[in-house]
Image (tube, rainbow, N blue to C red; front, side, top):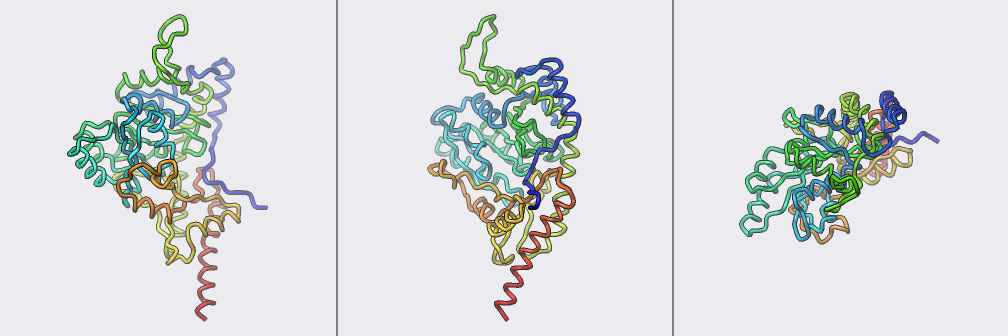
Length: 386
């Protein structure tokens, strides 16, 4: 039995364990402590933002961000459709409703032109959304400037979901630092991980302070336990923050490794008819968190799903790109602006194993497996036509 090659696994170094040992040695095991404080400060230095609050997940950070700007029952929030459900779920926690926006072909992220047209129309009918929730997908920034410009034009807060894009750039800056608030995820499959965790960032000190307050059960400053607001148990553990501090030290190495994975895949597989890799937009640098491609079955000879299943038979995990949220049963009644681009990417898109700890032998095994699928298809065609 061959060893399974997984899509994106945690990649630990030696410093993480030392910092965790320090948390144990000092008995800072609670969801506060010096590692949490240092992790927030070091994250700000790395991303160029002013303030950060470390929380239990990226989803928690989105929930807090939406609550901080006053999203409530009956509101609408414009949201990228090509993303994981965790982006939109917190909208519903607050009784609001997502309105999904299609992708562009340049970056696979929210289409700025569609957003502008939609907001112009909504302004005319007096039904502007409460916020725009922008996703930076698969390690690549969306085209932020035109999106931020139209949001500012209509005084709509922009929240950036940069869960998949830590280490990427947009015109030299970190995506997640342009809008009113940005969020990041340190889930186990992300480019760096704390096992589970997230970060909310902003240049607005008051917003981040309120996020910390809400994330710590909204405990009032009193000697006894007193609560004037409903809060959440969303603060990050000091132990996990120690892991995060160690991971931050090697972020640039992890980005370089994933970009190298992409370059190896692209060099070997771009020559195959019907295969196109996710483009890198010229306004920034992608981390290539996941190497994504599309497969045209009419040219390649096999569909995305046939390729995925064949790889699975060879103990190679691959995965379709995100199913657009407007196609998800739970969001079936929500409006979508456009949708054809995201639907096409889902129908044909595949994510290949992309971990920063993949060996050259594992990369070669994936490449050979994809090539063999194409070779068998061509052989079948030759037999058929003969």
